[in-house]
Length: 345
Image 1 (cartoon, rainbow, N blue to C red):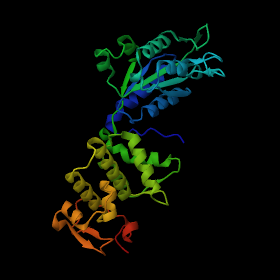
Image 2 (image 1 turned 90 degrees about the horizontal axis):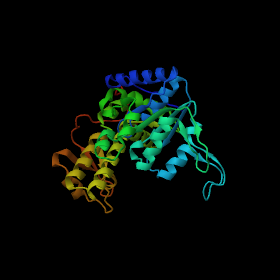
Image 3 (image 1 turned 120 degrees about the horizontal axis):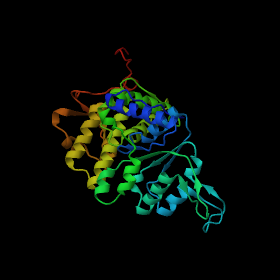
Image 4 (image 1 turned 90 degrees about the vertical axis):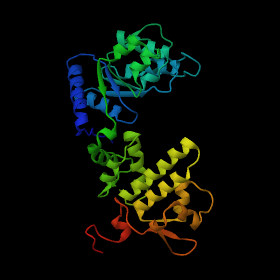
Protein backbone atom coordinates (compact mmCIF):
# COMPACT_ATOMS: atom_id res chain seq x y z
CA UNK A 1 0.00 0.00 0.00
CA UNK A 2 1.51 3.32 -1.05
CA UNK A 3 2.07 6.12 1.42
CA UNK A 4 1.40 9.80 1.05
CA UNK A 5 4.06 12.39 1.76
CA UNK A 6 3.24 14.38 4.91
CA UNK A 7 4.89 17.80 4.78
CA UNK A 8 3.13 20.46 6.83
CA UNK A 9 6.11 21.56 8.93
CA UNK A 10 7.88 24.79 8.02
CA UNK A 11 11.13 22.86 7.53
CA UNK A 12 9.48 20.91 4.69
CA UNK A 13 8.35 23.92 2.65
CA UNK A 14 11.64 24.15 0.74
CA UNK A 15 11.48 20.40 0.14
CA UNK A 16 8.01 20.71 -1.38
CA UNK A 17 9.17 23.56 -3.61
CA UNK A 18 12.14 21.52 -4.84
CA UNK A 19 9.93 18.48 -5.49
CA UNK A 20 7.70 20.63 -7.70
CA UNK A 21 10.73 22.21 -9.41
CA UNK A 22 12.28 18.83 -10.26
CA UNK A 23 8.99 17.41 -11.56
CA UNK A 24 8.41 20.48 -13.74
CA UNK A 25 11.93 20.22 -15.19
CA UNK A 26 11.50 16.56 -16.07
CA UNK A 27 8.08 17.22 -17.62
CA UNK A 28 9.58 19.57 -20.21
CA UNK A 29 12.38 17.15 -21.09
CA UNK A 30 15.19 18.26 -18.78
CA UNK A 31 17.34 15.52 -17.31
CA UNK A 32 18.28 17.39 -14.16
CA UNK A 33 19.88 15.03 -11.63
CA UNK A 34 18.38 15.26 -8.14
CA UNK A 35 20.63 14.65 -5.13
CA UNK A 36 18.75 13.78 -1.93
CA UNK A 37 20.66 14.32 1.31
CA UNK A 38 19.47 13.35 4.76
CA UNK A 39 19.85 10.93 7.65
CA UNK A 40 18.88 7.30 7.21
CA UNK A 41 15.15 6.75 7.45
CA UNK A 42 13.97 10.31 6.69
CA UNK A 43 11.94 9.23 3.67
CA UNK A 44 14.21 9.92 0.71
CA UNK A 45 12.64 7.10 -1.32
CA UNK A 46 9.16 8.48 -0.67
CA UNK A 47 10.27 11.92 -1.84
CA UNK A 48 11.84 10.50 -5.02
CA UNK A 49 8.65 8.61 -5.81
CA UNK A 50 6.65 11.80 -5.20
CA UNK A 51 8.74 13.66 -7.79
CA UNK A 52 8.18 10.84 -10.28
CA UNK A 53 4.44 10.86 -9.59
CA UNK A 54 4.15 14.61 -10.12
CA UNK A 55 6.06 14.28 -13.39
CA UNK A 56 3.85 11.40 -14.51
CA UNK A 57 6.81 9.02 -14.79
CA UNK A 58 7.33 5.41 -13.75
CA UNK A 59 9.51 4.95 -10.66
CA UNK A 60 12.27 2.39 -10.07
CA UNK A 61 14.63 2.26 -7.08
CA UNK A 62 17.72 0.32 -6.06
CA UNK A 63 19.69 0.34 -2.80
CA UNK A 64 23.39 0.03 -3.69
CA UNK A 65 24.83 0.36 -0.17
CA UNK A 66 26.46 -3.06 0.08
CA UNK A 67 27.18 -3.81 -3.57
CA UNK A 68 30.62 -4.62 -4.93
CA UNK A 69 31.61 -3.11 -8.28
CA UNK A 70 30.58 -6.29 -10.11
CA UNK A 71 27.23 -6.43 -8.33
CA UNK A 72 26.64 -2.74 -9.00
CA UNK A 73 27.37 -3.09 -12.71
CA UNK A 74 25.10 -6.12 -12.98
CA UNK A 75 22.33 -4.35 -11.03
CA UNK A 76 22.58 -1.24 -13.17
CA UNK A 77 23.37 -2.65 -16.62
CA UNK A 78 22.19 -6.27 -16.51
CA UNK A 79 23.78 -9.17 -18.36
CA UNK A 80 23.21 -11.55 -21.23
CA UNK A 81 22.79 -15.27 -20.82
CA UNK A 82 26.14 -17.02 -20.26
CA UNK A 83 27.97 -13.78 -19.45
CA UNK A 84 29.49 -15.44 -16.38
CA UNK A 85 29.25 -18.67 -14.45
CA UNK A 86 25.73 -18.98 -13.13
CA UNK A 87 24.18 -16.57 -15.65
CA UNK A 88 21.66 -19.15 -16.89
CA UNK A 89 19.36 -16.48 -18.29
CA UNK A 90 19.55 -12.86 -19.39
CA UNK A 91 18.72 -10.17 -16.87
CA UNK A 92 17.66 -6.59 -17.46
CA UNK A 93 19.49 -3.93 -15.51
CA UNK A 94 17.86 -1.05 -13.65
CA UNK A 95 18.87 1.42 -16.38
CA UNK A 96 16.94 -0.56 -18.99
CA UNK A 97 13.97 -1.12 -16.68
CA UNK A 98 13.79 2.60 -15.85
CA UNK A 99 14.15 3.77 -19.47
CA UNK A 100 11.76 6.68 -19.95
CA UNK A 101 11.16 6.99 -16.21
CA UNK A 102 12.83 7.77 -12.89
CA UNK A 103 15.63 5.72 -11.32
CA UNK A 104 16.61 6.23 -7.68
CA UNK A 105 19.96 4.90 -6.51
CA UNK A 106 20.04 4.96 -2.72
CA UNK A 107 23.25 5.21 -0.64
CA UNK A 108 25.52 6.10 -3.57
CA UNK A 109 28.05 7.43 -1.05
CA UNK A 110 29.02 3.81 -0.35
CA UNK A 111 30.19 3.10 -3.93
CA UNK A 112 33.86 2.32 -4.45
CA UNK A 113 36.02 4.10 -7.05
CA UNK A 114 35.11 1.72 -9.89
CA UNK A 115 31.42 1.95 -9.10
CA UNK A 116 31.64 5.76 -9.06
CA UNK A 117 33.32 5.70 -12.46
CA UNK A 118 30.61 3.47 -13.94
CA UNK A 119 27.88 5.72 -12.56
CA UNK A 120 29.53 8.87 -13.92
CA UNK A 121 29.82 7.37 -17.40
CA UNK A 122 26.20 6.27 -17.71
CA UNK A 123 24.83 9.57 -16.38
CA UNK A 124 27.07 11.63 -18.68
CA UNK A 125 26.53 9.66 -21.86
CA UNK A 126 23.20 7.91 -21.37
CA UNK A 127 24.89 4.76 -22.66
CA UNK A 128 25.71 1.49 -20.92
CA UNK A 129 27.08 -1.96 -21.71
CA UNK A 130 25.33 -5.04 -20.31
CA UNK A 131 27.75 -7.71 -19.11
CA UNK A 132 28.58 -10.15 -21.90
CA UNK A 133 27.57 -7.83 -24.74
CA UNK A 134 29.81 -5.94 -27.17
CA UNK A 135 27.50 -3.14 -28.27
CA UNK A 136 26.42 -0.32 -26.00
CA UNK A 137 22.79 0.53 -25.46
CA UNK A 138 21.22 3.89 -24.71
CA UNK A 139 18.66 4.81 -22.08
CA UNK A 140 16.72 7.97 -21.24
CA UNK A 141 16.55 8.10 -17.45
CA UNK A 142 15.68 10.81 -14.93
CA UNK A 143 18.22 10.24 -12.18
CA UNK A 144 17.74 10.62 -8.43
CA UNK A 145 20.59 9.67 -6.12
CA UNK A 146 20.48 9.63 -2.33
CA UNK A 147 22.88 9.32 0.58
CA UNK A 148 23.08 9.90 4.32
CA UNK A 149 26.74 10.86 4.00
CA UNK A 150 28.30 14.31 3.67
CA UNK A 151 29.41 13.86 0.06
CA UNK A 152 31.42 17.05 -0.11
CA UNK A 153 33.41 16.01 2.97
CA UNK A 154 34.07 12.71 1.18
CA UNK A 155 35.24 14.65 -1.89
CA UNK A 156 37.68 16.65 0.24
CA UNK A 157 38.90 13.45 1.89
CA UNK A 158 39.47 11.81 -1.50
CA UNK A 159 36.78 9.17 -1.00
CA UNK A 160 34.37 10.48 -3.64
CA UNK A 161 35.04 11.76 -7.14
CA UNK A 162 34.65 15.52 -7.44
CA UNK A 163 33.54 15.32 -11.09
CA UNK A 164 30.83 12.85 -10.11
CA UNK A 165 29.72 15.08 -7.25
CA UNK A 166 29.17 18.03 -9.57
CA UNK A 167 27.37 15.79 -12.05
CA UNK A 168 25.00 14.63 -9.31
CA UNK A 169 24.43 18.01 -7.68
CA UNK A 170 21.97 19.34 -10.26
CA UNK A 171 19.30 19.97 -7.64
CA UNK A 172 20.41 19.31 -4.06
CA UNK A 173 17.47 18.57 -1.80
CA UNK A 174 18.11 18.25 1.96
CA UNK A 175 15.46 16.29 3.84
CA UNK A 176 15.13 17.30 7.52
CA UNK A 177 15.03 14.61 10.23
CA UNK A 178 11.82 13.95 12.15
CA UNK A 179 13.07 15.82 15.23
CA UNK A 180 13.05 19.01 13.14
CA UNK A 181 9.47 18.49 11.99
CA UNK A 182 7.80 17.29 15.19
CA UNK A 183 4.43 18.78 14.24
CA UNK A 184 4.25 16.30 11.35
CA UNK A 185 4.93 13.21 13.47
CA UNK A 186 1.32 12.38 14.56
CA UNK A 187 0.07 12.57 10.97
CA UNK A 188 3.07 10.62 9.67
CA UNK A 189 2.42 7.98 12.33
CA UNK A 190 -1.25 7.75 11.31
CA UNK A 191 -0.22 7.29 7.68
CA UNK A 192 2.35 4.62 8.57
CA UNK A 193 -0.15 2.77 10.79
CA UNK A 194 -2.69 2.80 7.95
CA UNK A 195 -0.21 1.25 5.54
CA UNK A 196 1.32 -1.45 7.76
CA UNK A 197 1.03 -5.00 6.45
CA UNK A 198 -1.75 -5.39 9.00
CA UNK A 199 -3.22 -1.86 9.39
CA UNK A 200 -3.47 -0.32 12.84
CA UNK A 201 -5.00 2.72 14.55
CA UNK A 202 -3.53 5.28 16.94
CA UNK A 203 -5.31 5.68 20.27
CA UNK A 204 -6.01 9.15 21.71
CA UNK A 205 -2.85 10.59 23.25
CA UNK A 206 -0.47 8.50 21.13
CA UNK A 207 0.51 11.46 18.95
CA UNK A 208 1.72 13.48 21.95
CA UNK A 209 3.95 10.65 23.11
CA UNK A 210 5.39 10.22 19.63
CA UNK A 211 6.14 13.93 19.32
CA UNK A 212 8.13 13.88 22.57
CA UNK A 213 10.65 11.34 21.21
CA UNK A 214 13.64 12.53 19.13
CA UNK A 215 13.55 9.56 16.69
CA UNK A 216 17.25 9.06 15.87
CA UNK A 217 16.19 6.38 13.37
CA UNK A 218 13.58 8.71 11.84
CA UNK A 219 10.59 7.23 9.98
CA UNK A 220 12.16 3.75 9.90
CA UNK A 221 12.38 3.68 13.70
CA UNK A 222 8.88 5.15 13.95
CA UNK A 223 7.47 2.39 11.76
CA UNK A 224 9.16 -0.33 13.83
CA UNK A 225 7.82 1.11 17.09
CA UNK A 226 4.30 1.46 15.68
CA UNK A 227 4.27 -2.07 14.29
CA UNK A 228 5.58 -3.56 17.54
CA UNK A 229 3.07 -1.51 19.57
CA UNK A 230 0.19 -2.64 17.36
CA UNK A 231 1.25 -6.28 17.64
CA UNK A 232 0.79 -6.09 21.42
CA UNK A 233 -2.92 -5.34 20.94
CA UNK A 234 -5.51 -7.76 19.57
CA UNK A 235 -7.42 -4.78 18.20
CA UNK A 236 -4.25 -3.36 16.56
CA UNK A 237 -4.75 -0.23 18.67
CA UNK A 238 -1.52 1.66 19.32
CA UNK A 239 -1.73 3.06 22.85
CA UNK A 240 0.48 5.70 24.51
CA UNK A 241 1.67 3.29 27.18
CA UNK A 242 2.62 0.58 24.67
CA UNK A 243 4.59 3.14 22.64
CA UNK A 244 6.47 4.10 25.80
CA UNK A 245 7.13 0.43 26.53
CA UNK A 246 8.61 -0.12 23.07
CA UNK A 247 10.76 3.02 23.33
CA UNK A 248 12.05 1.92 26.74
CA UNK A 249 13.04 -1.49 25.41
CA UNK A 250 14.90 0.09 22.50
CA UNK A 251 16.61 2.55 24.80
CA UNK A 252 17.84 -0.30 26.99
CA UNK A 253 19.06 -2.23 23.95
CA UNK A 254 21.01 0.79 22.61
CA UNK A 255 22.62 1.44 25.97
CA UNK A 256 23.59 -2.18 26.41
CA UNK A 257 25.07 -2.37 22.89
CA UNK A 258 27.08 0.77 23.59
CA UNK A 259 28.57 -0.28 26.92
CA UNK A 260 27.95 -4.02 27.10
CA UNK A 261 26.19 -3.59 30.44
CA UNK A 262 23.72 -1.19 32.04
CA UNK A 263 25.00 0.92 34.91
CA UNK A 264 23.05 1.16 38.17
CA UNK A 265 22.00 4.69 37.20
CA UNK A 266 20.74 3.53 33.78
CA UNK A 267 18.78 0.69 35.38
CA UNK A 268 17.19 3.13 37.81
CA UNK A 269 16.30 5.50 34.98
CA UNK A 270 14.58 2.72 33.06
CA UNK A 271 12.60 1.62 36.13
CA UNK A 272 11.54 5.19 36.90
CA UNK A 273 10.43 5.73 33.30
CA UNK A 274 8.39 2.52 33.36
CA UNK A 275 6.73 3.64 36.60
CA UNK A 276 6.02 7.05 35.10
CA UNK A 277 4.21 5.40 32.22
CA UNK A 278 2.47 2.47 33.91
CA UNK A 279 2.21 3.52 37.55
CA UNK A 280 3.35 0.10 38.79
CA UNK A 281 6.05 -2.45 38.14
CA UNK A 282 6.62 -6.13 38.96
CA UNK A 283 9.82 -8.07 39.48
CA UNK A 284 9.33 -9.62 36.03
CA UNK A 285 9.08 -6.15 34.52
CA UNK A 286 12.36 -5.11 36.12
CA UNK A 287 14.12 -8.25 34.87
CA UNK A 288 12.81 -7.64 31.36
CA UNK A 289 13.79 -3.95 31.37
CA UNK A 290 17.26 -4.36 32.78
CA UNK A 291 18.09 -7.60 31.01
CA UNK A 292 18.79 -9.42 34.26
CA UNK A 293 18.74 -13.20 34.01
CA UNK A 294 18.55 -13.59 37.79
CA UNK A 295 15.57 -13.15 40.08
CA UNK A 296 15.25 -9.52 41.07
CA UNK A 297 14.77 -9.17 44.81
CA UNK A 298 12.52 -6.63 46.47
CA UNK A 299 15.60 -5.07 48.06
CA UNK A 300 17.21 -4.63 44.62
CA UNK A 301 14.14 -2.87 43.24
CA UNK A 302 13.80 -0.59 46.23
CA UNK A 303 17.50 0.27 46.10
CA UNK A 304 17.02 1.66 42.59
CA UNK A 305 14.53 4.26 43.78
CA UNK A 306 13.97 6.67 46.63
CA UNK A 307 11.94 5.28 49.49
CA UNK A 308 9.13 7.80 48.99
CA UNK A 309 8.69 6.91 45.32
CA UNK A 310 7.30 3.40 45.76
CA UNK A 311 5.34 1.17 48.06
CA UNK A 312 5.08 -2.65 47.91
CA UNK A 313 1.81 -4.42 47.08
CA UNK A 314 0.80 -8.07 46.79
CA UNK A 315 2.53 -11.28 47.78
CA UNK A 316 6.24 -11.98 47.86
CA UNK A 317 6.30 -13.65 44.43
CA UNK A 318 4.28 -11.00 42.58
CA UNK A 319 5.19 -7.86 44.49
CA UNK A 320 4.14 -4.64 42.78
CA UNK A 321 5.95 -1.42 43.43
CA UNK A 322 3.52 1.44 42.88
CA UNK A 323 4.23 5.14 42.61
CA UNK A 324 3.02 6.89 45.74
CA UNK A 325 2.72 10.10 43.67
CA UNK A 326 2.26 10.53 39.95
CA UNK A 327 5.15 11.84 37.92
CA UNK A 328 4.47 14.73 35.55
CA UNK A 329 3.32 13.29 32.24
CA UNK A 330 2.10 10.00 33.74
CA UNK A 331 0.15 8.09 31.10
CA UNK A 332 -2.79 5.92 32.01
CA UNK A 333 -4.82 3.99 29.44
CA UNK A 334 -8.55 3.93 30.07
CA UNK A 335 -8.61 0.32 28.86
CA UNK A 336 -6.28 -0.69 31.70
CA UNK A 337 -7.91 1.41 34.46
CA UNK A 338 -11.50 0.51 33.63
CA UNK A 339 -12.39 4.19 33.23
CA UNK A 340 -13.75 6.09 30.28
CA UNK A 341 -11.89 9.12 28.94
CA UNK A 342 -14.13 11.43 30.97
CA UNK A 343 -13.08 9.62 34.17
CA UNK A 344 -16.41 7.84 34.70
CA UNK A 345 -16.32 4.11 35.37
